[in-house]
Length: 134
Ligand SMILES: [Zn+2]
Image 1 (spheres, rainbow, N blue to C red):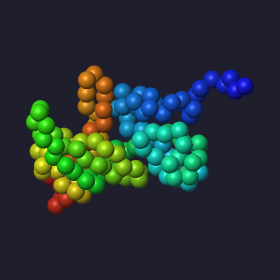
Image 2: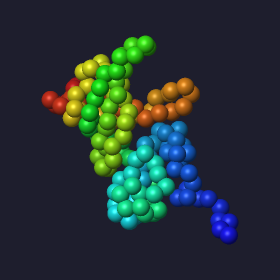
Image 3: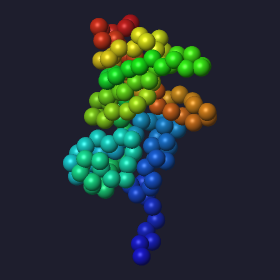
């Protein structure tokens, strides 16, 4: 019988990720077996199957990999895949820019937004593909 009390490393990955968002951190996992950056949070590395997944704090900077303006009942919103500089990709959205003006290759930075009372990860453009916006 293993009666060891859970620590962060063995805690369910989803809550560790959400606890990060609650304090304004974008957390991801780094595999001790193959060094892959892992997101969304998992129990096993999707690359090599290792359980040695270490939690890391992302700098929150990355680049738009793909972007779509989705038209729904509540208007138009953006859905984007973001490639973070640490080497993982996540689905999110780019705010502060017209949904159909987000471009592949735009540099973006992480921030949290409130969605139904829960913090979620969103991004804002830091510079456009053509150069700094400011
Ligand atoms: Zn691995």
